[in-house]
Every structure is written in structure tokens, then in C-alpha cells.
Length: 285
Ligand code: SAH
View 1 (cartoon, rainbow, N blue to C red):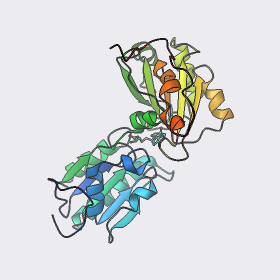
View 2: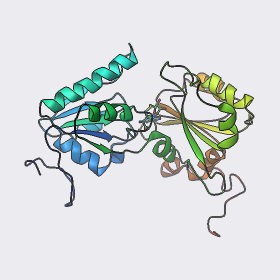
View 3: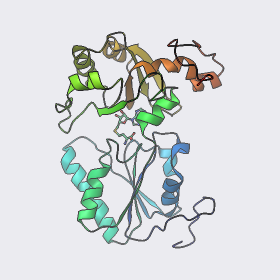
View 4: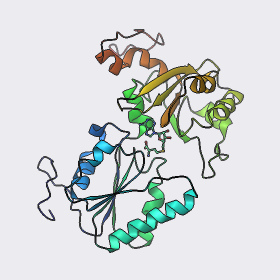
């Protein structure tokens, strides 16, 4: 251990956080308990924490007593220039001999530009370590009682973004192939262009009655879940003023929530339907 910083962790072979290292870690979707132990270890050791807007503030309170916090979220403007500025700042901090924790919401390599930052750092000769996190498209849906895969429903799941670098619905996505090839679609950053996205999927042959869940502020006390269908999703999202950040999930796994919505059940609500798809006999398999 580099000095007497307390990591709050059980005894084990925890990695060193030497000065000059940039440690890129995921903070998970919000609920602080979803941060990994390695993430917490890094947070306790870091001299500087450079974080994004989606990192839950309660997690930052766990930092070491002398750690400095820097916000690096995007505030509009040119996203690419801003991204370059963030990478340059990380390089500068590393060269100043700081232990730098780059903390991102969810998982840093899932629609989080962690790959770009890691590439830039490595090219600049900066030593890095990567620690994954719980991504909103898996952990956030679990909080809503939606398993991203279920043996009776889907053998594949696709994660996609509703934005490309220009801020538009990604033109590189082959909607026809997606619609046919993936029974479950988990969409990040999809609220702004939801009408266009759902329109593309309907046009590509997905059913208007297919279930959709939109999970906002997943895992946080402010979490809300809108259950709708592919045909109605865009109108319902607008009518209900769905808040970002939100994950949109399309597919039969959404029905599992009727049984598995554990958060509501812990609040005393009964399961709504004990056999949502008339499928799945887990006791027998
Ligand atoms: N790296 C992150 C994703 C960053 S992109 C991850 O792995 O989760 C930002 C998008 O993530 C948001 O637009 C939203 O679609 C999703 N997201 C992140 N946190 C969320 C949360 N708590 N609830 C719902 N969606 C979330």
C-alpha cells in the first residue's frame, strides 16, 4: 500500500495505485452499493477524481480526505473538443504525479467513451488500469425486475445507442437486421429520438404490441418505470414526461417484471401476474 490511506476493504491482494496511474472505473448506474470493491479501493486512494455527470454524488463522498474532485461532464458545446480536453487533463494530472481516478457512470466501456480515453492515454505513454462497472442496461433493468435474458424468451440481446456522434439516431444501424436478429433490444440515450427509433423498428417488422419498458433514474430512489408497447412508447414517454437518464427495453422479457418486480414487492405490493407469458416453469427445469 502506498501510504496509510484506509480503503474500507476486507484484507486481500488489492492492487497498488501508484502516482501517475490513471485508473478508469465505472461507478454503476446510481445506487452507491453497486460500485465495485475495486472502484471503492481506487476512490479511497485517489488524489484527484475526474467524474462525469452520471456519477452519483453520494459515491464521491466516499473519497479519501484529501482527494480533489473535478467535474468533466459535457455541458453542451463541441462534444469532440470537450472529450479531447478531458483526455488532456487526465494526461496533465498523471504527469504531475497524481493518482488519478477517472470515474464514469455505469461501465466505462459501455457507451461511455472509456475506450477513447484509454486509447489516448496509452498513446501518450500514461499507465492505466480499467475497472468495469454495472451498466445501466443490465443492472438498471434488474432493478426494475427485468432480466435481460431469460431462457424461455431470448438467447440474444443487443445494446444500442439512440445517438451517434452527431447527436442523431445512428445511421450506421441496420434496423432491419436488428429487428429480425435480436429478440431483446436495450437502448441507451434513446429518449430524444424515441419516435424515430420506434418508427424504424415498426417499419422493420417488429410488432406494435410488443412490450416496452422505459426505466428512468434506474436504481435511485427517484426511479420510475413506464410500461408501454412499441406502438405507443414515443407518445407515452412524452405524455408522462419521461426523465433522462433512461433505458428503453423492447422484448418479451419486459413481461417478466409482472412477477419479478421485487422493489414494488418489498414495498408490499403483490406480484401482478404469476404467469406472465404462460411460459417458464423454473421449478421443473
Ligand atoms: N456507461 C454508462 C452509459 C453511459 S451513456 C453505462 O454503462 O450505464 C448514458 C445513458 O446511459 C443514458 O442516456 C441512459 O440511457 C443510460 N443510463 C445511465 N444511467 C442510468 C440510470 N441510472 N437510469 C437509466 N438509464 C441510465
